[in-house]
Image 1 (cartoon, rainbow, N blue to C red):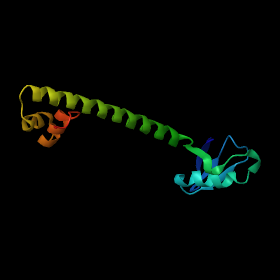
Image 2: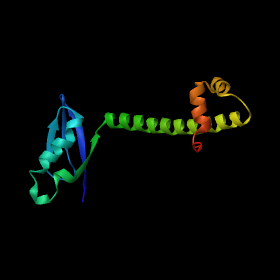
Image 3: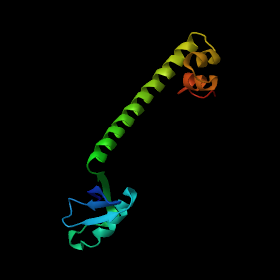
Image 4: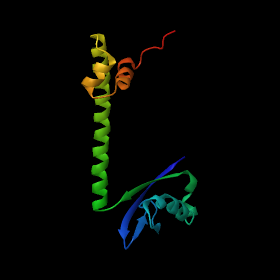
Length: 132
């Protein structure tokens, strides 16, 4: 069974000081955030009494302080942008189909939507069954 741990990382004099609240006394440090999971797994070997398999441990790295707030805001904005892109693609697909059903050429559809005629055709025919 996978164990889920949180590694809180605090920037300190060019290093990331790392602690794991779920494991009392587990502390390590790294130069880069991407090194934290490996370092925590390595440190877990010093606590065999916990019965945690380091290889089967998922580690969520959480920076502390202002960095966390900046990262949270950026993630939220990126998720919002991805959702907006998905809605825009669906609207373009629907619009391209409507325009094609009205007799417009793919070149005209592309010009109206600000895309290439090839992309207009892809959108207008997305999900159509291939001819037999």
